[in-house]
Image 1 (cartoon, rainbow, N blue to C red):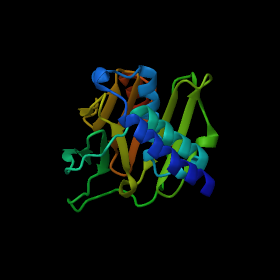
Image 2 (image 1 turned 90 degrees about the horizontal axis):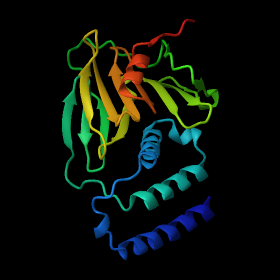
Image 3 (image 1 turned 90 degrees about the vertical axis):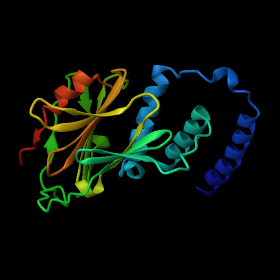
Length: 232
């Protein structure tokens, strides 16, 4: 581990120096490919999760971090306070290069949210997706399931959180977080990048859920409506 750390400490200054010598003015309006943007979205989502350090090896995390820096350039988080917006049961903080989504404290005195996950939920996914049990994570405050297509080109992550443990990061360079209303009058947040990758976040009064995947908004809403309790 020390050798990897030393190599990384030597690599990053060299990269930063080389980057400063490059004339990037011709690329001010450059747009990354859809494939790159989808991969970046997945990296942001996975690194923002509580269980990320538990399911990724140290080597893979370091490689991912280096690749992200090399591909995305030296991105600096905003020095000024982020814009804060209220969306129903959530607070979003809008930084320069990402949204941070947090659960909002309930002040009504009638909060029914659970401190631990007492009841697990499940979703129905399209037939071409297969659940990868090796990526399943279960704790007292978080349950996550992962689904892949056979060619591994499309993925779906479904997570259930206790309210006091929810926080997540979303790219704000290519898509906005929008609050919408479902057909039953419930509120949810949607983050849709050109109907290529979509995320949906909602609170059912006891737990917070999110679904992230290589799906259109219509596809992810169909999964959203399929939510049901796992029978014991």
